[in-house]
Image 1 (cartoon, chains in turn purple, cyan):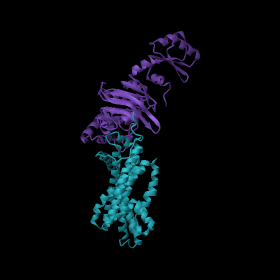
Image 2: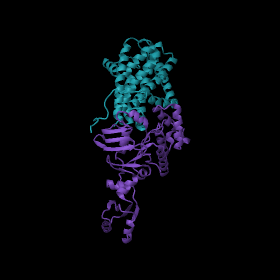
Image 3: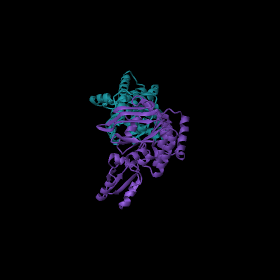
Image 4: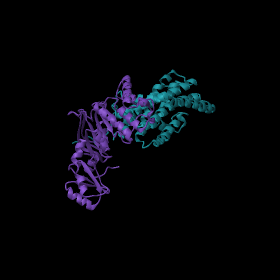
Length: 307
Length: 267
């Protein structure tokens, strides 16, 4: 699994388009064998960062290296060792499922027989064997997504970049993709994924880089981030002045955040403190639940997710 | 931290490797899959022109510069087919692959560069031109309209001329905001060339100013000159001027189109 060998390193990484700064002087490392998630709302800079890693976008400022090679000077070498599953469907509609893999393999100079062997293996792994001679335009969204993943693996990459791998998928297809990502992780592939689904990041990633407005605002293991910022439990109550006052007296060090007409109360105190409070202050319409990454995100950015 | 560059793309002579042919090969594979709809209509078109214009209209025309009318227009049909083949391949065809299918984005994520993707498209455009015009060549041979063994050089000229029209087309693709935009070059550039490049009547019929414009600005004029010289066996040293004109224009637009596309694709 994750080792201490740094595979990707960014220092002061910046990307501007026109006058807009999409990625703003970020620093990060990715270690060999880990699964790192860039988590954040749309427009946070996740996709831009990933596109710079696979040399699709040139940097505006800063340094970015993959396996010790600068992305500005060794694009071809880096692209040889990276597998990319982009957000949008850019499968080749002029070809069948298996031809998509074979033709993609040709761009990597993989010999014909070897390409066919790998294509068959990938189709089996992604449960697409029966569809191998169909045109890609006939596939469902979930199958297309899996074919994009299969295509990203044709060159047997050391690093796999998954840009929003499950956006737009139904829960079943989503879990299938998760299982496949976990299996790849077990094989030792270093994985970088972007997502705006908190549960996805928590389920798949060893480490999370939380992005907002082009900056990395926090990073760490999912469980540690939750513990550090929002504790074990969250209390959700109605926005009522009297109740709020009572809560503030009881939990002076807690964080109170309003989302619409609900108040979220975060405390780093141990499990059970909210139940104790409610026994003495009976209120209706209240929820106590386990804290999750979404709470971390909302707390750190102080606002709800963008659409 | 130092700013790397103000603009992400600098004008440069493209660096190309054999990977260009991987892109070319992808397009060839698609062509071979769809050869029935792509190839056979192009076989019918020259036959229609030869029958309608050569036999029908040509019946009213004694001869042009001492040549039967049908023999006069046959080489022009070869030239027109190579122009259409490459120009439409690298406008509509390339635009669909770039904009709707995102095929270029997919290839650029592999060890193939943007420059190589565009160069592969241009070489494919030239190949389409060669395929189309060779088909027409076979048709006019069947009509007995070839009078010189020099015609064997026509496919080479078709590839070169095809590369020229492909490169010009790709410049339009690089600046096209949407696919309807191609109506402009199709009607304002291709149609005038189709009619005014010495195709269906000699340029000398036109006012001198139009003749000069045709020779300076309409690439098809030079392709028609060469095709006619090779097929009718009237080639002379002046054709080398047309050849030089084509080579210069091809090099210029080949480099320009790759740079314009780079600018469009790399943000």
